[in-house]
Length: 285
Image 1: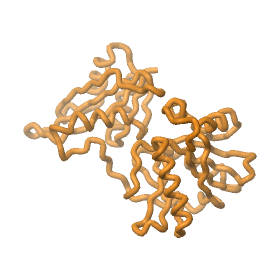
Image 2: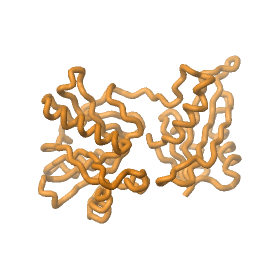
Image 3: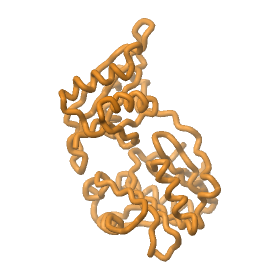
Image 4: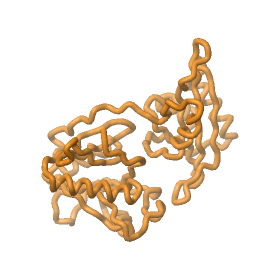
């Protein structure tokens, strides 16, 4: 499978009355443990040329009749144009935050010429509260050993299960005895409703955000490309300590973590499971 990570956005530089736009393509051949960029392409145009047809032509030229199977896009402003061009070329488009190769290329490309420009920074909205009908009965932090997490959930009859091979601990080079942290939600009769809503939002990662005093805080669920939701909050030092431990363990395994939805704590039935990875660990809003 050939995957391209693609960005198409304007640069800080302006030539006359027009801005410059840049199409950047990272071609990924191996997307497992030894993920690498085989090729990087970069083409610029004026804003008057920045349209679907220009993208179709440039993507076709760069592909040399070997179009990618999937194009991954992390920037919301880019998604519409890329999707329109990809539709004409019959290429699947995946909106995802997990485009670390492309983001690294963009930062390195522009570091010297535009020292005050962050090409991967996105404006994010204030976290919104979850709808009341999606509140679970209770939640807890759990840990699963890296060499067990895939086997525990891969073959179980779970209605919603997102377990991408690219995030298998073995493919990320994570030691087998390290704990993978996660949050377990006991949803009772609302379990399926909660799970379906999370899946529809396309979960990206779940992180702990402390208050200034550090003795309370909450978990923020980030979904889609920039959406954010207050997953839960607490006001106890004990809960804050557990949450801090969750973040420390998450950092130790490169941002890998999980969300598990269950009707109850019997451990017999699982409603949904997501194995997720946060690209960059950030503790402060």
